[in-house]
Image 1 (tube, protein in one colour):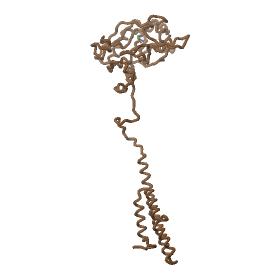
Image 2 (spheres, rainbow, N blue to C red):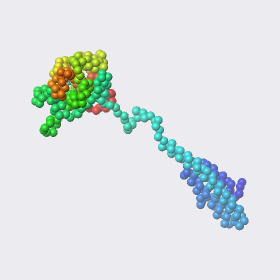
Image 3 (cartoon, rainbow, N blue to C red):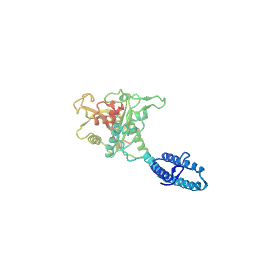
Image 4 (cartoon, rainbow, N blue to C red):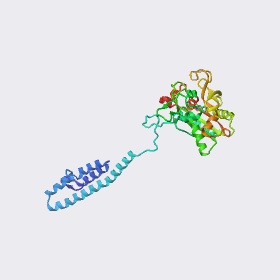
Length: 357
Ligand code: PHE
């Protein structure tokens, strides 16, 4: 047993303080230990107070013992403070750590959901790929056109009955120019030919995908806002055989070898001769269903040899150049490729539909 001052066993007190300090797990606990052993109400302070009743000699030696004990206790607490602070800091860092390897499971409802391209955009990209593989370039043009590009340059004069083939949205911008939402991608043909003439860059081998608009009532095969991919080849010595070959190659590449296609004579003011391009209905495999109006065939678009009147309109000599053009519905291609019975599903934005593709 060590020295006892004012009924306090000093060695015991120092040991108790050191043990308590070592057991402290946080700064708050350590501060409580400090108050308990060094504060005004501590046993050490009580022992100090008892010095007053001692004689001079005893007070001196007891005072020295108490001061030494205070220093020892302070040192023990300081040593522990360093460790406690380091532990607290690393616990904080651990809690704040950004775990970049964490995998967010898709089964957990997460506030950020990754989307993907709509099936129409996917289809457009796939169609472009097929034509790029055949040596075509990809171009685009405006969705709002003047009457010249949408109709006149395509050999459809004002008030011509052929305009009845396209239920047009006219924009009321007033004279002198009539402005329309383009009813097909064929006006991009005119842009490309005019540019090629101006820059002397003929021949042209291009496809032109894009959005078109018609004042149509939506049904299983029609939308008022839809997409086409136009094709145009202007070169020397082009014949209908080149056109038929491109269409056959496209059909096999995109729909597969088991889908048949056919060209049926048709009329378009800007091609001569003209044809309609149809494939076996993939919904009923040619049996006849609601989607194909019981015919077993689905029309994907029109095509033909570029009419000399069109070449004239853009300043190309029909004696030197000839060419062919085609225009297919991208939405129809998506519909047939994925066997979508009703095309309106493409634009209803029902996630249960959209997420299937
Ligand atoms: N533009 C025509 C349509 O939308 C399709 C077509 C394009 C026909 C090119 C012939 C040549 O109906």
